[in-house]
Image (cartoon, rainbow, N blue to C red; front, side):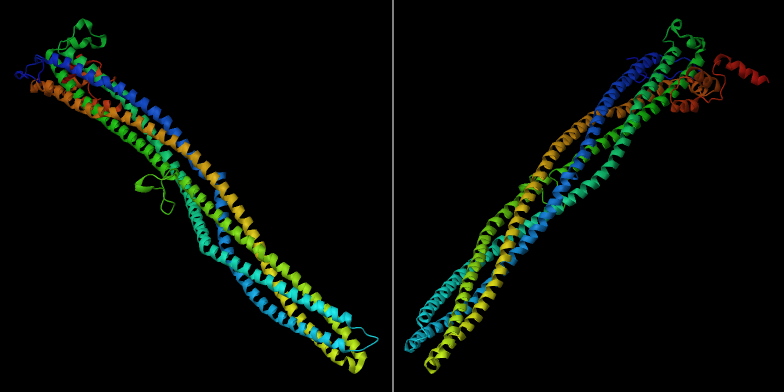
Length: 618
């Protein structure tokens, strides 16, 4: 290979203007290398632009999906589920409190039953006295001899009434025994319910409140995330704008390298590697230059293009680095959106919410699914409550009906008591007319009336106790019925809220999976776009080698030639060749640093000597 790198050769003699042998071949090599370095830029940036364009469409879709996910949990259905669970939590608290009231009410009925048992004992004792008085009255009535008064009716009635009083009192006492047993059974059931199901009901309420708090907290977190997402969308938009701006560096760099390629063609002309007859019209003057001037111009062009190559590829590498950083930012944004969505709508659970972690670190159910499962668990506990409450309710109804039957028994006793009092009054009047003969029977009749008054007092006390107990039993019955309806209403609301949550979860799961797929696809596209961006570093390495080889060409010429390359005349030649070809400001700045704009007329490089001569004489 004809290269001054391989064999630099002896330095040209001082003052010689001959371009060293091998320079033309080296320039041809550099032209090939420059083309090879320029070739992949367009293809690389076309691929990057295509991947970026496809990922931008996905990022737009990802934004829409995230916003749609954010509105699901905060939608009308989501608000309805929250409202229902709020009511259910209050309802379970009320049911738990009512269970205690039921037990307290049955305890009060049990105490009332004990008091009534004592009253019935007193009533039975009075009925026993009436029985003894009835026997005595029959004996006394038989001893009376009267042609005007007949006591046979009295004997029959007193016998019937005291037997009826005994039977009714015994029946009421027996009913009270049964009723007290029913109260004891209901109380035992209520106590068992309080011990067993109250704990389950409290647990259900606790779980529901925890789920409700978690749901409310998650909705607030989603609202905050939606606000943050708006900022993220803005940042993504800015990154995209910077990426689009950075992509322009490919075209700019290709143009700058093309300018350097044109300069290499000029260098080949200066080395005589090009047929003068084939030169463009604006470059034919180069063939007329003296060898020394050619050498001076060659040195200046080598220095200028070395700087241009370094600067172009340094700018290229910086813009590519910026592009890579922005693509990395977009890649991180896509991953962050997926992570945020998974945390908010998937199995991620913030502190204080139902855990989304399964056993052994496995991913647990999605958040709404976990809440729905808690509602379902509470629903099962509530169903257990309802079944136990149904038993107590039936027993309370039995107690209430028992007190109703006892009221009828006491009413019958009261009726017997009235008949007995009237009969005693009639007998007393008859005995008064009989004088001494009826005195003994009159005393018995008076005792019967006294017993009747005592019976009335006791039966009234029993009736009052029964009325009070009946009211308590009725209240228990109504409360039990209300609780049953309330539990049924809670069951319905919990079922509806659970269905809503599961529907929302299904909708969220579909949208979340689509979002995660889009994020993964976008990440893959962005990763693909970033893969070829190592070209920036390769271009910098190429530029350094390229500039060094140009510097070797310039350095192979004598020092006097190198010094003369800084002259105003050479600067004019540079302006004539390249001053109007630059497309970016940095090219003009570099050119201005080597060939100042205030140099000689760059359109008349051959007259530069004449102008210098005129300046000398003038």
